[in-house]
Image (cartoon, rainbow, N blue to C red; front, side, top):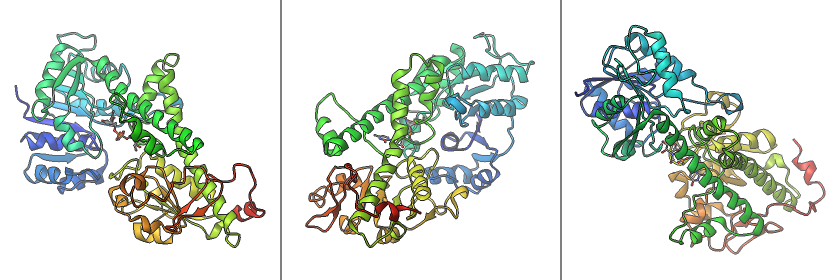
Amino acid sequence: MKFKKISVIGLGYIGLPTAAMFASRKIEVVGVDVNQKAVDTINEGRIHIVEPDLDMLVQAAVHGGYLRASTTPEPAEAFLIAVPTPFKEHHEPDLAYIESAAKAIAPVLEKGNLVILESTSPIGATEQLTQWLARERPDLKFPVDGSEECEVHVAHCPERVLPGKVVRELVANDRVIGGMTPACSQRSVELYRSFVVGECVITNARTAEMAKLTENASRDVGIAFANELSLICDKHDIDVWELISLANRHPRVNILEPGPGVGGHCIAVDPWFIVSSAPEEAKMIRAARRINDAKPHWVINKVKEVLFSILKNQPDRSARDIKVACMGLAFKADIDDLRESPALEIAEALNEDLPCTVFGVEPNISEMPANLRGVLELREMDEAIDAADIVVMLVDHREFKTIQPNRMLGKELVDTRGVFRGKHQAAMSLWTPVNTKRSTTDENSNGIRNTTGGDKDGSASVGVEERLAV
Ligand code: SAJ
């Protein structure tokens, strides 16, 4: 039986594209969100997040009359829950948003409905959701004990799309569908078949939960390996980008890319759900989390070393005269999402720790988030580069990849993403990124500065500490 009306609870980075996708198949979709501003924006046919091609999709869906948003749920045939699942203190999963979604939809549930949990969830969350629903609606039969007798079907179908490629991946990716019963899975497949071209693979709810966590933990471990290599290479004066590209020529080696740390609300969070469920066993997963979480601190120290080096070589300057441009604040390239962003963490720490003028450059936002307004200045890319003494490349946004290397003349560069290395290899052939070890700052024939990792031997010029002081 085809679905005529669907409700999506949570209109964020996953819920909104999913809602628009169903609407594009001419299914009536009601999106529900607690954020009135987001609801109003969507009802005008606009979007409140940055995601390629989503604006067109939402505009067409709203103007075609298939998608509308509301702050209160209403009856529908299927409900998809796409709300955040953060962690609490000690990395314990926080299911509060799922619980409130359950309480919000429970009053409008009817016999024959399907409820799907799309949020990334710890093992057992779908069972927990089923129990919450059953408690709210004792008049309806739910598959609490896996009973096929249920009147409302419940399943977990984790979203697996990559921010930045959401619209394409929603359609193309395979879906893992874990029903509370085989009938729940079957009904869910019917729903997703309306737009998913990838395969819909059926399993049980717990395995589906673990599958999603495993995917993100696997990526986290891979990135931790790359980040660890970047530290080792720095120590041995080896260019990590060249190293990885060489190693990846082996047919069975595929190393990921180092960066300033791992951000976002998925990869930096989800592995902890595995760790907290099996603390004794999940040793490697925990170690990867720790390695990736430590990387921003390493970058912060690297910038401090560069500053130290400038002050050592230019005795007439004080730290207050130095300007630091933090290029990119989002958690990865070409998105506006600042949540759990290592780039933002680094920019904030530099701004707080250093007497220098620190500014952020983020082409995907028009103003700083409220908590940073008046604290960290947001500048245009060109203006920031011109003004900066130290350029800290934190995100490989497409705008930054077009920066000509000669713009860096006379500046110090800390390139955590290898932006210049990859794109301008030929032009930069005489230049070495800052994370290689030299003992002093020197200038090459292009006039672009190579900067050291600082005074490893502690032989800083007299007065540098004083000039570093706030
Ligand atoms: N990163 C690196 N090096 C890399 C790859 C990524 O430092 O080689 C960093 C990124 O810069 C970013 C973080 O890792 O800070 C995460 O970025 P990402 O692109 O790897 O992943 P997300 O968080 O945007 O999306 C992930 C995806 N999961 C996998 O690829 C296994 C996506 O498919 C999931 O749907 C999403 O998490 C989610 O919602 O769980």
